Length: 342
Length: 270
Image (tube, rainbow over all chains, first blue to last red; front, side, top):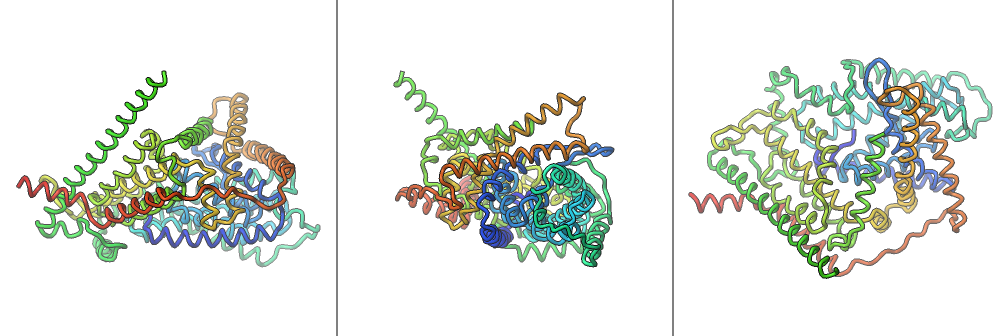
């Protein structure tokens, strides 16, 4: 679900960057208030843990597909939401820099989509409400699965909105959403089960590591009405996701959804209303620029466009030639230097 | 398992590249950070049908990679991760945006095809630009600059710790994975029922490690406050580099060199 730089417009990237920076600033303030000097080394090591943990795939029985743990809820349940958000942000930054998994300008989007919803919405409103200081296997399992699913649903919806507002894809909103949400529901359930399994293991082996466990005073609270509301809310999200259900073994939900849309002939037919919308989008697109916009209408413009392509090819050729010359002469110089040294 | 070990290798090879001593490596990290951001912004601000305007932007990755001695296959392996995502996001465009944009040697080319190729070009350019930044700048120097642009110290600190322990924990996970596979029959991943125990073990080990890291830090005078080396100042050359390169990007953004060259040639031939 990591977005690349090419998929967003500067405006979307900027806004999301500002939003994520704000959330980071707030989290830093909160973590500092805790005054726990042990926390920072723990956060660092946990970031590395999530990074490694997400590369360990497990097989989902009877489906033939595989999944991995979700980082957000797991970290929040261990470190608390604020520290978890910071850890996730740095993991995403490292993934963007070293693995091109998500872009640098899109970092704000990715932090928000994968970190904010999980740590600041799903964790406090779902996991916390369901567990309610009664750390049992049942509570943790239900709370974790629902929180992971809800966080992923919100994140997937965010991806749809950011991509559409950026205007890089021609996919209509409805089909994009209907394809993104169900596939991320499937992924979310897989991630949720795995995450719950890890947290239950922690509960059995060293429950003090769980966020909020130490504060439990043995009070056995009853099923609060808030909890019922939360369960209903989550149920609504899940049922919404079920509107169209596709079981899938594809590794990435976004790719799978998009491929699916591109492959359906149905969409091509109802193009007229969409074309009007596309027309509006074309004329209002961010930073309207020289392009091929009117190229089809007048032959003069078409000529310019064609010459643009010819020129583009030449420019690219020149750039490559220049690079080749530099590399070649550098190699020569190195060889010469080596000879002199010997 | 291979996924774990390849990721370790990727980090190591990028680290080795970043230790190089070329002119690109010697530039101040802040200068590179600024130019990378201006470059990325310039590239993604092109409208979705533009192809010719993007072409001149290839000059930056090509120049920097040959000057910085960054191998081209590094770009390819990163594109393998980034490109499929953009590919499927753009794949619908040729199907849905079918109006004819222009005729290229008599063959009609649709708007959707143009926007699809434009998206692919943008992906290649942005992925290469980030690669150049990280392959020519060691991570600790880059992180040092983050405190300069007012990123909170506590964030930078745990970012560096995460980065430091990545390879360690990943190789720990890799050896656990090997052990698991040796004990189980032909299996691709980990059985769902073993996930809790497997990752839980790794988690407990990580907590133990964090504890030891904390004590080691404590022994070296850590008291909850973090000190960063001030880092070297930007030299005049760095300023000149940053300003002139950004100016070139803005000029390329404003004036379409491809069209200028193209029309000069057409004018000459026709």
